[in-house]
Amino acid sequence: MQHRQSQHTTRSSLRGLVNNVNHKLPDFIGCGFQKCATKGISTNLRKHPSLSLPEEPEQFPDYELNFFTHPAGCNDKPSDKKTPEEIEWYKSFFKSDGNIHGEFSPNYADWAQYVAKSIHDVHPDVKLLFSLRNPIDRAYSAFNHYCNILPRSRKWGHEGSTWSPDESLIWNLKNKHFDVCYSTALKHFNKYFSREQTHLIIFEQLKKQPEVTYNKIFDFLGVKHFDVGNDIIHGRVYEYVLTSEERDECREYLTDQVDELFNYLGYQIPQWPEFCT
Image (cartoon, rainbow, N blue to C red):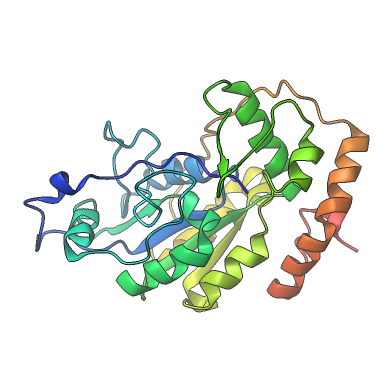
């Protein structure tokens, strides 16, 4: 599992924001997963006239507020208690203007064991969105992203452990880097939020049937269908080429995780045929 450096407000920036009646808590939160088109989804949702997401201020260049992750950085567990002043700062991004407001911070899923409760304590009625991608392709995308931005990413990792650019993808996977267990994260959220409050987006279906996929999101959020297209964000060229042998090894390593996800969902994801029986 990997985690980028999060950006967060300082306490001094909270002053003057308490009890702002013109703002509210978000109606929905995109909680994950990284490398599953969350930036593209949030970008396209902004095109809907009834949906609003935070703009791209200088301090949040990826639109990610990361409010419920730790302000100190990527290797510290999040604090699960928010002060009233911090909550008012968070609300300042969502206007009470009649629109449906939300935010996407895919780091939330990485810290699900802490973040799920923290979100519930602040906003138990919020709707949650999760985007899932074939875990082999998700890990491959994350590994290439880290490789492409070296040396900035060299010390990135999770809970004190860092990845190795000198080793293969499968080596990093087996050492718990780029390894995201969807079912584990979803189960943490399901402790506090009902399945009716969560909506799953399948990356591969989004790619092939964007209109169908977005209309399902709109139904979940309670807004009219609207053609938002499907702008692709972060369409990177991969320098590291995954061989068929490596892909088979990744599939073998990830099969148990995917079976656990299918059991949790109660169905298989047909867009991931190499994991379906």
